[in-house]
Structure formats: C-alpha cells, structure tokens
Length: 143
Image (spheres, rainbow, N blue to C red):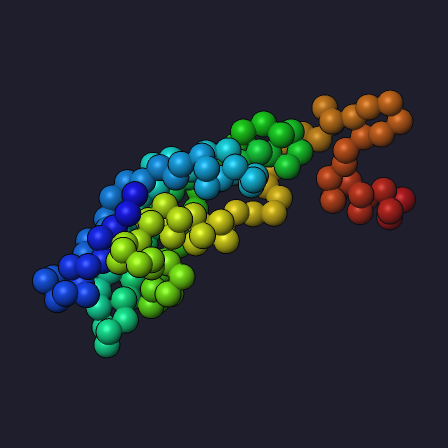
C-alpha cells in the first residue's frame, strides 16, 4: 500500500495521517522466522519539516513466530516508536511511501533471535540426549 506524499511536497496539507491497522503481506516475511504479522496497529503522522519528511508513529502488534524449542507457532507482542526523518531510500520517483516495506523494515528489528514459551523441557529428549534448562545445567555442574 502506497502513501501519497505529493500532498506534503505541494504544501496542500501539513500532515498525512497514517493511523490504521495493517497486515504485512507474506512477501515481506518469507525469509524470516516470522510466520504472520497481522493486525498491526499504527498511530502516526508524516509531516514536512525544513523540506524533509518527518515520521512520528507508535506501532503495536503481535507477531506469530516459531518457538525456538518446540517449533510450534507462538505469539510475541511488540511495541515500538519511530520518531525520525524519512530516509531517502523509502521514497521513490512517484512521491509515494510503501507503508508495508517501511513497517517491515522497522518491525524486523524487534524480532527476537530466540523465543520460547516452553516451561517443561522433560518432553524434549531422545536416544542418548535430553534438553535441559540453564538452571538444570548449573545444578549438574555443582554436583
């Protein structure tokens, strides 16, 4: 979804409201640990300050990730603020902003490297191995 920035460049308006609920298309999340990124609540505006575009917004949502241990889908809530000038690489010759690309590039920074909701590690074992927690490891090392 493209946001038309020409209204700001032509001084037809002072700000563009980008507040909405967005769902990031699959093409943005394909090569990541994110399974889904739906119902992302964005509250914000784009203004023009000294011939530069300025974005101020709050982004809240829940991303669906693969659990690092069980590989089951788990929900991971996130919240972030963006308060900065819009970089030149977000704008193209048509004076538009691809809001999905912009959101994805900022949300991807919030994706944890590892995330699990597994509390009981005892079910994760096999022939000659078992998964243990950090506490269990410390206990074994003390003994």
